[in-house]
Length: 227
Image 1: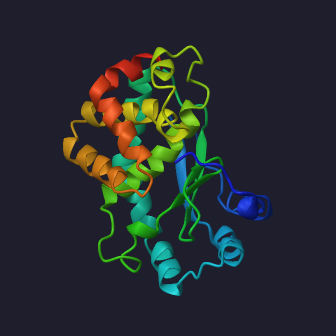
Image 2 (image 1 turned 90 degrees about the horizontal axis):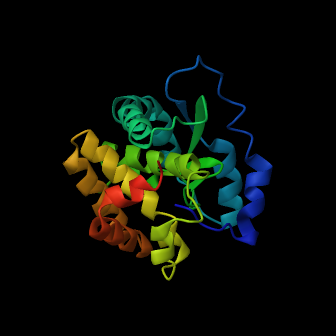
């Protein structure tokens, strides 16, 4: 998601933003970026204090124990999606490596820096945890914000057409259309349905509204503006 950072918590990033970047060793280059996942322990420590949010030790233990699982799921599902996206748009990802911090604090996911809140993926947080392919889609979602940051033209006809929608809706139209195209390319309609269902359940109804628009217009209309 692409949200404004409140003044009361924005300094968290300044304090700990580089902690998890420095903790991951470099790897060899690939045709798509190598995505490294790590637990955002430094961020969560400060976030918990500043947001007055109690992080249970069981959540931390689970996210750390499941890092290899999250990484394996990304390699299995996320990497093919990234390759499909490069082929669909015709433009490679700019980065050789992407470092994604996984948080269990109350702070929302964001694309810059790449921070993904995985509380709802944890069995210790909720008995109704999201399935692995949806967790992978959340990581991809934030990476796509990063990927699309220089690809959305101010002359976009569709953005002009939906200029009356709120910023959350307009900032997700092309992103969701591209995710839709990737899942169609890889013939994964069931995963796409689960991703859309998860977004429709979010308290912010703008995500469901964005999917409504993409499905009404057809994802290809938005994707064509990215080429």
